[in-house]
Figure 1 (cartoon, rainbow, N blue to C red):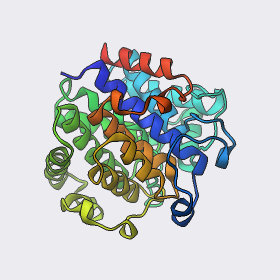
Figure 2: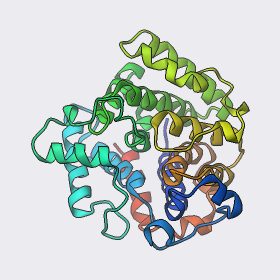
Figure 3: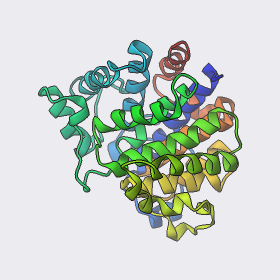
Figure 4: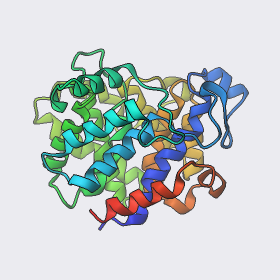
Length: 314
C-alpha cells in the first residue's frame, strides 16, 4: 500500500529537481561541463532566489490537489483545468506569487479551457504539440495503482495529458513513465521497475490504437537505455527526449542527488528533465535521501509535504 512518505518523496523529489534546474534552464551542455551544478543555486535564467520551482512543480501540485479534492472520477479533468487556469492567471501554486516559464502549448490549451473549450479537447493534437508539458506533471497518478486497474489508470492519464497535450506520442510517454513509477511505488528496484514497467506499457500499447507510436520509444523499450553515451542523449523539450534523458539519469546513478544533478548538467531543458527524473528518484530513494540543505531551501516546503498527506488520505 502506498504511504504518505512515498508520495512526499515523489512530490518533493520532483520539486527539488525542478528547483535545481531553474537557474540554468536553456544553458548548453558545454556550459554545464565547464560549470556543473553541484548544489542549489539562485537567480540565473529567471532571476529567482534559490529553491524556486517552476511550472513543472506547480502543475504537478495542481493535479495532486485536484485528486485530493474530487478523486479520480469524471470530475477530475474539469476540476484540474480550473486549477490550471488559476495558476496561469493568478499564480496559484507558485512559490512567490508569480507565474513564469510557461510553455506555449500549455498556455494555449489553458486559455482554450478558460474560453469554455472542453478540457479533453483543449490540448494540442498535432505532431508539433509533443513537448514535455504533460509528462512533467503526470506523476501523482502513479500513487493510485491500487485504486484503479492498470487500464483505467492509463486511460485516466491520457485524459489528464489531453488537457494540454493530446497527441498520441505524449499520451504514450505518460503511460510508459507511470508504468515505471508504479513499479517503484511497489518497492521494485530501479532496474526491475524499468524493465517491468516498459514491458507492461509495451504490451498495453501494442494492443491499442496508439501502437504506431511505439517506434518513437524504441530506445526506452529495448531495455538498454543506460548503455547509451552522454552524447547520444538529448535533453531538449521534446517529450521522447525528455523521457529518455530522465530514465537514463535514473538508471545510471544510485542515489537521489547524483540522479537529479546528472539531469540538470545535461543542459537545455534542465528543470523539466530533472523534475521528471527527480519524481521517480524521490519515490525510490525516499525523502530521507534528498539532501536536507536542498529541501530546506524549497519555498513552501511544508505546504508541499501537507499536500502529500492530503493525497495519501484520498
